[in-house]
Length: 269
Image 1 (cartoon, rainbow, N blue to C red):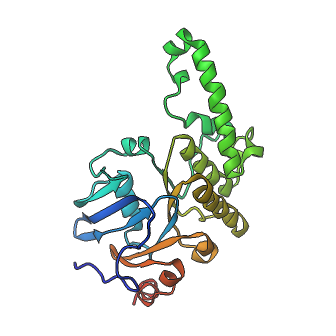
Image 2: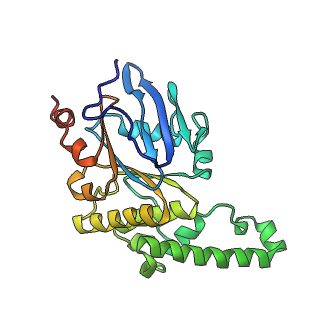
Image 3: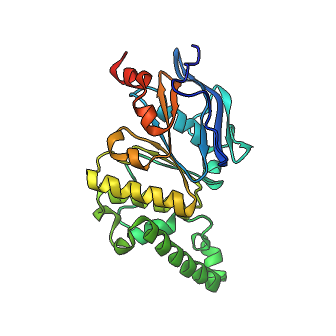
């Protein structure tokens, strides 16, 4: 299948911003189905990038390839100028790529603060032998980690919920908690799968205001797969549209949303 002509764009964006992640000619087949057909995207550091497209267009497959859940048949994934195409998913998480899902899965019997703290890497309290031998070191680490966790909770607007059970949070608050857990692990690129799904419109705006603040003030980078375009369009820096495994439009969000080729893909044209 030939690569689609990208409507309304002559190629990748032209700016001086650093590209934190790019894909090069990604191809993924499932039997006779071409889920990704020479997909090329670039994600700029500190920006919020949106990925849209009708069901079955390849969005989730692309996210799965970027995060290492599945391997491409060909092509490359480049993160911070490093080829990570063959890197396992857990190693990608260690170097700063996080993934959140449509249905959050926190530890529901732990508090919000505990959920953030347990997500941190290399906690010496996880090793019972080191905890017994170096108790002071472990306690110092826990104190610093708790302070850091409180800071992150402030960033996402959950500081007042720190001692609530995760099971008591709303769906939108759970998605903010997932962002906090990603940050405490050291994520620089957070890939979110439909963060607005199942969330009331007011809280959707709250979530995306936080996302925009985190990108502007903390330098975090977001790649977001979403269908509720009308609610989030004002928070997006750049957009890609996919259909039938191909990128069919890229560029300014409003231009992509109104691209004839994109509109026809949703209508089955």
